[in-house]
Image (cartoon, rainbow, N blue to C red; front, side):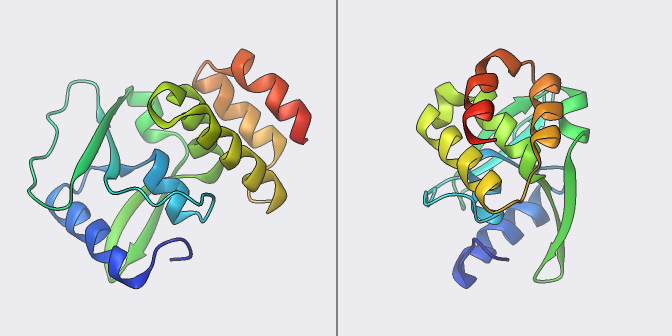
Length: 148
């Protein structure tokens, strides 16, 4: 996996085994997609609005709640060390960073947007689609126009 070092795979695998419905998102997804210089000390996962967060000693988790539509739209399935994981797509991850900018920081969202466009990992149309789903079009519009 491009963004994660070999030792970091263990944390993803551990979470995927113990919480198979967990969706890797935000800073963890940015790291998986190699879109950030951040190295989060927590594994960021999304769960349903009414779901109970998994309880784990290790790795430390940062849980966010997504609507049913947000949990199923823009999800990629990958294999890490033979274990199936679910992660938000590049465009969805960038839009999620803008939606949760108060948690991850606007600087992280902007870095993700710039890097996704620079590396051609997400088109403007894809980013716009997920901005609409997340209802952050007004927030993302000026930044998307600046990097498009």
